[in-house]
Amino acid sequence: MTLRGIVITGTDTGVGKTYVAAGIIRALRERRVRVGAYKPVVSGSSPGPGGSVWGDLVRLQTALGGDVPLERIGPQRFLAPLAPPVAARLEGRTVDPDLLRSGLDWWRDRADFVVVEGAGGLLSPLTDDETIAELACDLEFPLLVVARLSLGTINHTLLTLEAIGHRRLPVAGIVLNQPGPADPADHSIETNAEELRRRCAVPILAILTHDSAPDLLRKSPLSTIDWLGLGQPVRCDWSRER
Image (cartoon, rainbow, N blue to C red; front, side, top):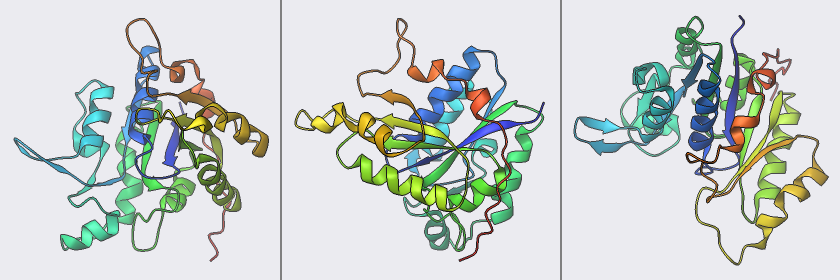
């Protein structure tokens, strides 16, 4: 079976990419799909009892069941909470562009679907010369845009979709996510989805409010989506001319 997958990008940092990625992984595992998680480069660690801890990788590892080595989920890890090439320079290192791509190979005979989580937004730098846009093009998986469910998301989301369209990258859809408690004064929460639907053709696949976290009696909206159908590989024809 050809490896399928999605590349998750955000409209901003802190919009909940890892939360959505973990939710998709759990939804697929519930369906007995062999699923992998791949974060090509991660920066920003916290101290732990055994050394540095990258929380995003731990959350993805937990969603997978906890038995996948962290280096297979995130092969390139840097300490400072900065853009990866900047964090790498502080350590006298560089981000390896080949490993960004080849790190996925470990999953090819171990998974039928892989959730790839980018760093930051679509144009956030991964190396000195590349962004998540270039990587998504080479991996040939459609993008999933995670947008913040709050005031300002219409502009951020439409700008991200415009950049995706300019590069002719495939896009599976949008997930609106509320990473923190709702602001009672923010009435845009009730209208954001409809306003986005009026202004773009990309489907909104799910709306995740802060109080809609799944429990034993309630499944995540992410569990109802046909991820295998959305994750078909698509060849990218972007010339990358600048």
